[in-house]
Length: 57
View 1: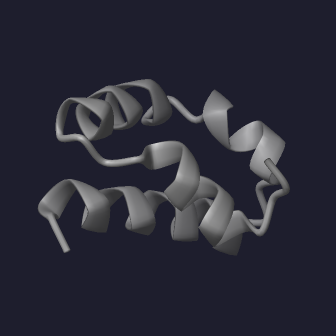
View 2: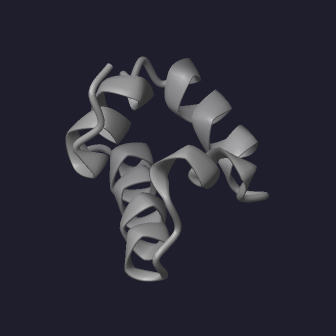
């Protein structure tokens, strides 16, 4: 697992543990920077987000 994937997973898990709804996670101030870095690293952030939150895409 790459460092950016690990960080992405950690932030998503932290938000889930805090009871943040998946639709509200993108409002977290860390989201934009983290997502941009994930895309730059060729990490499919959306697929990972969907996998972790169980959302239907």
